Image 1 (spheres, rainbow, N blue to C red):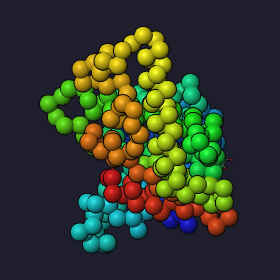
Image 2 (cartoon, rainbow, N blue to C red; image 1 turned 60 degrees about the vertical axis):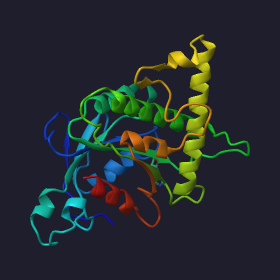
Image 3 (cartoon, rainbow, N blue to C red; image 1 turned 90 degrees about the vertical axis):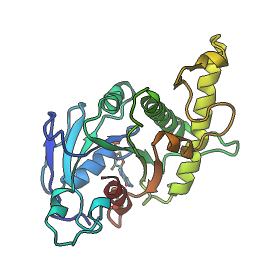
Length: 267
Ligand code: GDP
């Protein structure tokens, strides 16, 4: 159940830009609008018609502890104050994805990225290749992670700020859904395929392997080469990827507790 005290305001402008924000991305149909609607329920009856990014201000449920609040008393009023955050929704349509990437490149107090995926829509065959939905999700996530890698490798005097990614494996209420550990394996395997076909594409176009590693800016994701991609390769870039299951809808109601606790730890 969703706490009634959940406070929510929708912005179409850049107001409240100093609040910690989370970017909500992922393929179309993965459940992003449903997640926002879950937070809106009973407060606003508006339906979204715009394809522009939408920012929703939410308060973390008081039952979710944050790293900074764990030594504070539950009755401490500052607990309430520090728990507000912005959730920035982005349209999932491929051609509009640049909205999400713009926000990554120019973060305003960006604390993390939530990549939502429909865990009931992905599968792998016996040879380990994924279906269309898995392929598209993996391409999207690959491109996002590559962008974060480039951001981390951009030469600055400072170490790259942490930017954790939550892969929210949604629709786990459906019996066809892959559990989170299998979503993780499926995505890592398919991202490996995306990476090698991108590299092969570059090689076929006559660009040599050595040309790919131009200075600090690697054009392939993670360790590169022939090996298998796994999310742990992002750790050294201060991008920690967690795959966590849940469901926004379902006969027994939503289960978004683990996502909240990830957000709480990230704040
Ligand atoms: P978006 O394109 O990412 O915004 O996805 P939507 O929020 O529009 O959801 C796509 C479809 O999935 C809708 O028909 C939702 O009702 C359904 N859906 C979303 N979340 C869940 C879930 O947790 N479980 C189930 N069974 N269906 C869901």
